[in-house]
Image 1 (tube, helix red, strand yellow):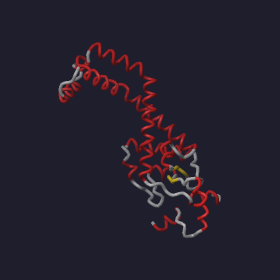
Image 2 (cartoon, one colour):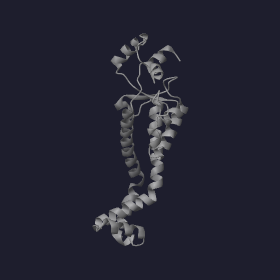
Image 3 (tube, rainbow, N blue to C red):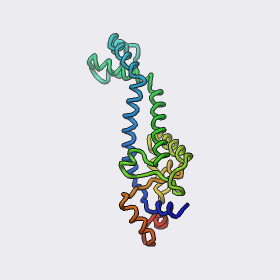
Image 4 (tube, helix red, strand yellow):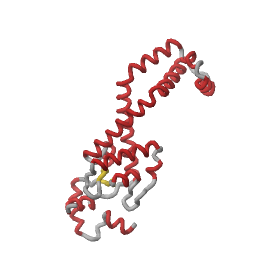
Length: 216
């Protein structure tokens, strides 16, 4: 590692958990909007035809063949004809298209994180919060690191995010997907402040990642 890269790492601070969580929330919202447009473009016509058919026959009439749906509607209380049609329409979409929509969402999110992390180390949420994914040894993560990080993130999402609550390496605030991909998440300084921070590196009293390890 060159001296310049070492200075870059020392001039950056490890990102706090709330910035990482907020960044993930922003990215999730963006991905949801993208997914809606993709699904509407692929299945929009099918959804419209399906709803027209339900309206023509009647949602409640169609539900009579499904005891589960009839039981659910009895628990929800009396519904208008439109509400019956809408609920049955939603039920059919979920039962018929949920798997394909899930696969599409995973492809979109994997490309989103992979391309952004591989290019700049920052997703849109990370840009807003001014945090970045880096490799401690070479600043920019390798392709293998990015693939490992995306794969680990997908597994964490399947587990409802609970594994991300565990800090595996407290010294570098690394979660499971950080450790598996050999990456860390750091904060960025403003451009006008970064040079000043790097100049302070000559001062041995300056706290950096290395000194944080020793104290922790």
